[in-house]
Image (cartoon, rainbow, N blue to C red; front, side, top):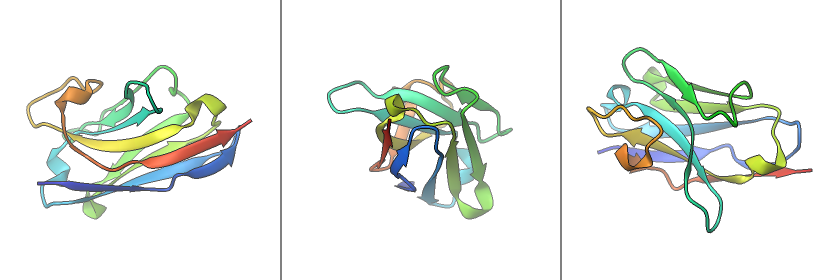
Length: 125
C-alpha cells in the first residue's frame, strides 16, 4: 500500500516557476515508477512526466519537455516536479501516481495503481 500526498501548487504568473512535491508513505516507494499527470475539469487526464524506479530514467510529454523536470529522492520517499516557464495552458490539477509493478507504459494512467488527491496549479497571463 502506498499513500501519496501532493503539495506545492498555487497561483503564478506566466513565465514563473513552481515546484510540486509528492510525499509517499510505504517502505516500497523506491520500487515504483512514479508519474505526474494533470487534468482540467471535464477533460481527460494527461500524462506529464515519469521517472523509473530502477535507473531514474525520465520521460516527458512533448508539451512540457524542456520546461519541466521530474526527480525523486528515495531516501525521503518524495518525487518532485520542477515547472519552469509556466504558461496559462499549464493550469490544471496535478496528481502524482505510482505505477503497477511490472508495467512499463509510463504514459498510460491505467497502469498506475496509487494516486494522490492532486494539487491545483493556476497560471495567469
